[in-house]
Length: 54
Image (cartoon, rainbow, N blue to C red; front, side):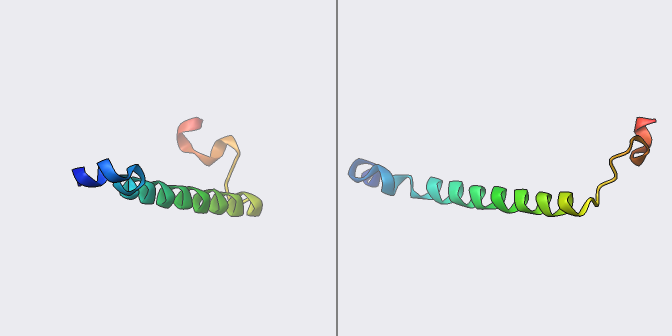
């Protein structure tokens, strides 16, 4: 792998770029799911929703 680093920076870091793309796709999916739940108003937002708040 040391030879690949000398030949091409992009080739040597391909695995890192793949992980970055997967993480970005997961983040976008997560944000879309949060928006779906927020639009449905499924979350209890009053202070009695959690026992530790009062």
